[in-house]
Amino acid sequence: MDAELFSKWLGAVRVLTRDQRRETFMMLALSEADDDPDWALSDAFAAVNDPVVAGASMAMASSPPGDAQSPSVTLARPMGTDGLADELAAAARSRVAALGCPHCDAKEVRPWGHAHGLPRYRCTDCRRTFNALSGTPLARLRHKGRWPDQAQALMTAESVSKAAARCGVAYTTAFRWRHRFLVAPALDKPTRLNGIVEADETFILESFKGRRADLPRAARTRGGKPEKTGLSAEQIPVLVARDRAGATIDAVLPKLDRASVTAVLSGVVTPANQLCCDGGKAIAAFARVGGIPYHVLPKPGGPKPEAPDWHINNVNAYHSRLKEWLRPFHGVATKNLSHYLGWRRTLEAFGHGKEPGQWLSSALGSGAYQQVTL
Image 1 (cartoon, one colour):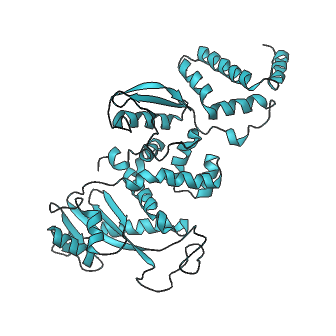
Image 2 (spheres, rainbow, N blue to C red):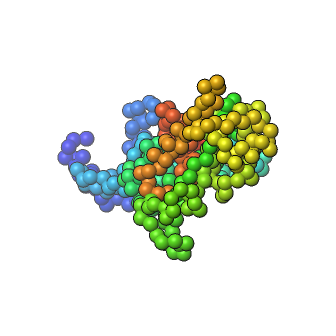
Image 3 (cartoon, rainbow, N blue to C red):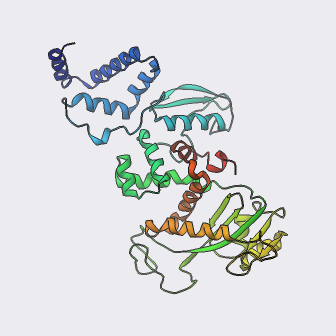
């Protein structure tokens, strides 16, 4: 096609109907398939049926040559065979293969078409249909093509405003995505700790961030400071236990007592472990009642010369990293604190090898402690 005819063709694009634009985009995709053998025919149809890709194609088709594409339809990632970002498509397939049916836990499932850019499946036992997001915190969230960017924002601990800019969504959407992505990691904890275990509590200032009425005290700004020095009811206890391989379990305690510690560590720390602590009454009582060998370290928790392996330096270092990591958030609402603990725990578990696909799998319920061997 020569340049003059091509210009006329582009001018006619503006008067096409919605269905005609979709058909035009499909024909362009099929032509691309003829040029590139790696582009499958199913990819073209999946791309056409995905609302995000279709919206982007219509926006490009309705714009005159040289106009900038609207940022609201910019695709941050290439789309895979199911109309999803490649990382999400892989995480979704992996979840279905590993967990099977979310309704009855049966493993025998069969493909059952597509809907909203997602492959659907049917369980051969209960006969119910589902997709890879059914039963997960990410179910019914939109703009799936931008989720890998949200995972990247979690990997780098970006602020909500920066995450919103990265993903091309509203501030409120970015905040909602953050906490939907953190529901599953907050619950992902090791079921057992091995060998020598270090346990200690730390304290984080209570915060009612985001609450606009019925505050039990005067409002603070950007984190604020406690009214009283030292430990008080304003300080929320957080228990952290780690083994020497780096596996970590933590929890926000309703009260610093033996019952609360037992609820967190029962079955995770057993008589087969050696527990190191600083002599806090709650942890010591848990170990004593549970028959767990424990070693009380002299303050500030360093090893004794005769027993260099007994110390709590690792858990104290984790406390320091956690509080330093929380600092840029200028106070975390206590109601959301467990989400941030899970966020930090997942970062530590993935280490330097973290990838968006791992974070997406974690958000879908296949957590860090199921993906890595510590």
